[in-house]
Length: 305
Length: 278
Image (cartoon, rainbow over all chains, first blue to last red; front, side, top):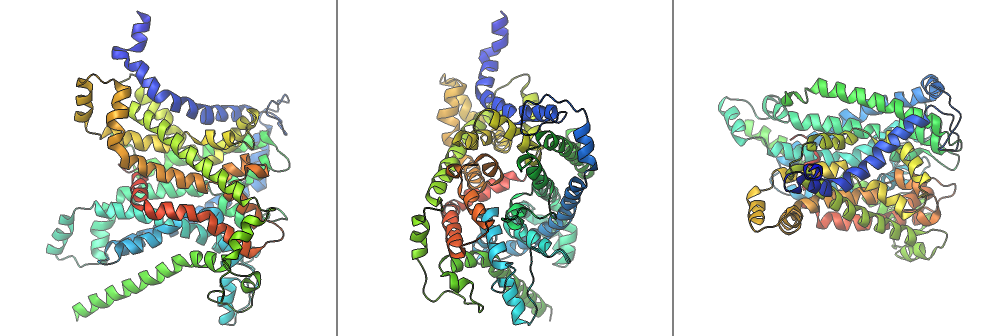
C-alpha cells in the first residue's frame, strides 16, 4: 500500500524522479553541498585544509569585513558595474535599433556585431593587452597617438589617471554588446506593427518621439532582463581582469573585483579556505539582498500575485 | 526639404554602422596580422597593415614547439566541450521534460530549488566547489573539469519552458499507442525538438570551450590545461613570443568560428531564449 502510494498513479512519482533525479542530485551535490560546506568552513581556521579543527567563531567574518582589500574589491565591483552596465545597454540598444532598420545587408551587420560572442575573454584580453593597449611604442593605441604627436601611455600600469579602466571596460563591451543586441532585436520584432501605424496617424514624428513613446516602453521586459543579466555578469567578472592585469610579478594591488580577491585569497599562496569561505558567504548575502531589491524595483513577480 | 533631411539622416546612420562594424572587426584583424607575422614585423616602430610575406610556417612552428602543449590543450578543450555539451543536453532536457510534463506534488518545489541556483553566481560557489572537488581527488582530471559543470540550471529552465509549449496532441497520440513517459520522450518529443537542442547545445559548447576560471582552478597540471588556460599562462608570462601567442589564439578560435558561422541561427535562437522575460 505504502509503496503504491509512493509510486503515485501510473507510477508518476517514480517517473518524475527518473527524469528529474539525475539532474537534481547533481545540481544539489555541486551547488548546495559546497555552499553548506563553505558555511561550515567559514567558522574555522582552515589554512590549506578542508577538515579543520580550530573553531574560530565569527573571526573570519570580522577579518573579512574590516579588511580594506575586501572593501576595495566591493568598490571595484561597484565602479565597474556603474560603467559597464549603462555602456553595454546603450551600445547594444543603439546597434539593435540601427540594424533593425536596415533594408540591405542586415544579416551581415548582425553577424559582425555578434561575432565577438564566439571569442573567449582570454583571447580578447590577449589582443587588448599585447596589441591594442600594449604600453610600448608598437601597440595600436600608442601608434595612433604617435600619429598625432602624443606621448605613449602605459595603459595597464598607469594608476593616475587610471587608464586600465578603459582597457577593462572596452574589452567586455566588445565581447558582450552583440549578445545583448540580439536580445533587443528579438524584443523589437515582437512590437506590433500596428502601434507604429497608429502613431503615424496621430502625427508622431519618426525618430525620437516614436522611440520615446512606443519603442522604448514596449521594450520594457527586454530592458529589465538585459539589466539583470548585465549586473549578474559584471559581478562574475574575473577572466578579463586576471588576464589583463596579472603578470609574472603577480597581480597588482589595484583593480581587484571580488572574484579575483577571493581567488588570490583562497587559492593563492595562503590557501586560506576559511577566510575565502567567509568571503563567499558575505558575497552570497549581498547578492541575495541585491537580487531581491532589483526584483522589487522592477516589479518582477507582480504577475504571480 | 524634409525628404532631404530624412535621406541625410539615413546616410549618416549607415556610415555610422559601417564605422562601428570596422571597429568591431579590428581585434580579428590584429589576431591574423600578428599571428602570420615575424616577431620583428610586430615590434617594428612603423605600423604595417599586413606583413609583406605571410608566415604560414608559424602554425607548424607552434605545434612543433614542445615547450607549448598546444596539441594537448586542444584535445583537452575538445573532449571537455563535447562531453559537457552532450551531458548537459541529456541531463537538462530530461529534467526539463519531467518538470514540464509529469504531474507530481512537489514538482514546483523542485523547480524553484533548481531556479534558486541560478541566483548563486560563480563568485560564491567556486571556492566551496573547489574544496569538494579536491576532496574527491579530482584535481587535474577530466572528471573534475567536466562533471561539476554538467548541471546547468539555465539549460534546464529553457527546456522546461520549451516543453511546456510542446503540442500535447503529439504525446497523447503516443499515449494511445501504449507508450509510457520514457518511450514517448525518446520517440516523439526528442525527434520533434531538434531546434531547441541545437540552440541550447551551441550555447553550452561555446561556453565550455571559452570557460576559464574553472579550468584554471582545476586543471593545474600542464597535461590538464585547456586552450584558454594555456593561452592565459603565456599571456601572463615573463617573456612572450608574440607571433606564436597570436597564432595560438587564432588556432584556438577557429573551431568556434566554424561552429558559429554554420550554426548562427541556432545560436541566435539560444540567445533569444536566454532573455528570461517570458
